[in-house]
Length: 308
Ligand code: AMP
Image (tube, rainbow, N blue to C red):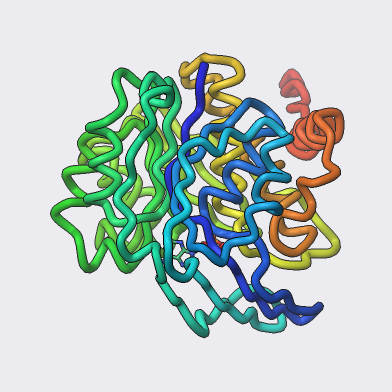
């Protein structure tokens, strides 16, 4: 059951209260793939410039990531610079240099077009639509977006929503898209536009899955040390989609399980800079953290004492 991601491949320079990185591997497709590949092989489509450290990207290939859809073209790679506040709650973008990403027009290689699970990372919704025109018959399509596209490409985004099964956004994006400050009402509004499910990510407060048949909540893993929140959302998506592809099951009950895998993988991503945490991570460690979630939310309801 092939799993395809299309998104940015970046060089990130990030400052947090705990340190900084320069030109580290980043981008939505990279975080998604590094995370998802722990659960299921991932096919990547993206673009990099002539200056991209291909050896570091190829290092990921050893972990079940197929880079046949990554094209290297002449020009500068996409670079993003960000700085986090002391409590890691706020992020300021210091610089975005699109480079070759500005001309990105995803071409899905023939051997990827039968992908059953497709994740459209945060890129221009017109490009996300063009990807859907190239894949044959996916079982489930999920997508991400951001404020820039909600504001600037509203019509294309609405056309995209009619064609996707799951929208994954953060709470601010859900509010902006719907014009409603209440995230549950915002999610209901989004469901009316097309998707069968909406995942609203709320950072350290967890994430909610809203569908027509109910709401499911998964907490964030209670980490005592968070190092760098960059890419948590894409790592969440990698865990979510990786689990769905590995189990090939799109029932609502399995989407709930996928939420837990998403939250688990997001929690690993923030423990180190860039995708470093996924380097040494084993499937057993992933399984152990998923099991820890079951303990986090398990509780009993004592029987009601009989009244006399
Ligand atoms: P997240 O923390 O989940 O928002 O993802 C951060 C990643 O998104 C970083 O690795 C950046 O390289 C990448 N990124 C930042 N801005 C953009 C953009 N405008 N388009 C695509 N990817 C971006």
